[in-house]
Image 1 (cartoon, rainbow, N blue to C red):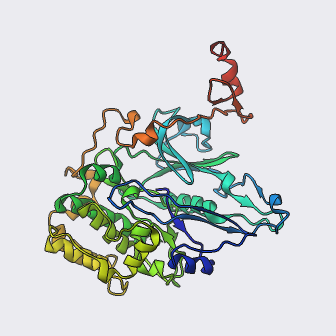
Image 2: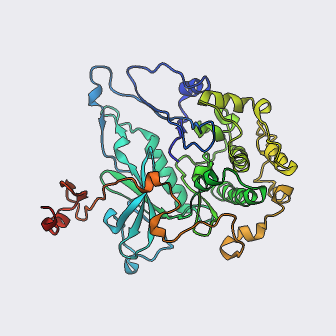
Image 3: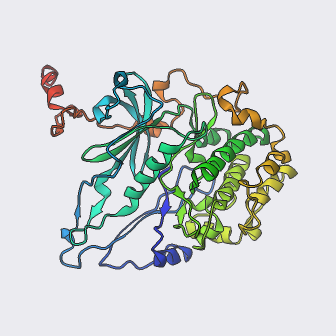
Length: 442
């Protein structure tokens, strides 16, 4: 969920350098930060997601560069957000959530934006996933008061979109608030873990099992397109989670964007799942999500995305020459190959438009095992999903990577807004908490 390529709409020069392989000569008077690291080794050729590129921030000129400061910035999240589906704080309509209302338990994941923690609501004992985004990365230029928009925009996008969502296959947002250092999104805890986690264990799925989850992706994407006018833009197995029942739920809406009639959108996504028109910097619309669906479907059915390589340049070259490089394993059925060809059509005008041709898709033979009416009413369905996550205790987070769940973190107890202290042998704790535990500090 972390490794992304995010280009703002008004940056043309870097868009061109990406198409030539991310090799560019940075202006020494601008501040660039380029991160490039491979994803989890789910396939033999590592999953090279396109780098996260923090765009150039116009700093003061050479010799005065230090005067550009990193500062805490108040994110415009309209104070705080509380979902109308919750009854909180004894029905207090003026309740505003704060960090001390949630007890941190363990780390579920980590990205460039910060950590995702499993937390317990103190007042109710309910478990949530707390996504925290560091505000320190928001850079303010003293001269122009310009704000580095990357994380700022991600935060607002995710919150604003999820506030409006009401769909069983899309993660729910319950609370949003901020303190001096971070913005916090309190999300539905999906204790089935990442679909990627289960896929890595099984290598690939049978067509019958894959069709179930592909159908749920279709329902979620089509809801975003038709109901919210949102292009998701980052469909990949890592962003597909499972709930406790084993049903698929889309997460991570930091790269999503409300569509517009002019189709002018930024170049963003993850390399292996990025549509050709996005790579070429051409105008695009909802159809880029259907290309990504084809890539994820291929991944589920074969254990690898359709276009791979040791670096992003090779991957994007293959995508732009997809007719030449798209190869199907011999064991895929004719039905699977036909569906994949319809989705992985380089020309978006010829790509299957599931938004308009939904009935045609439902009747495709690849989905012959899928009961669409049950999936569309999944909360009343008695059909068992292909994967039934093993959950002995939700607090254990058994379906998450131990790389994260065993990661150390420093809980913050700052109930009264006082400065957080660092005490030898303890995590960061509140002054009152400190005074009541002095006897344990010898």
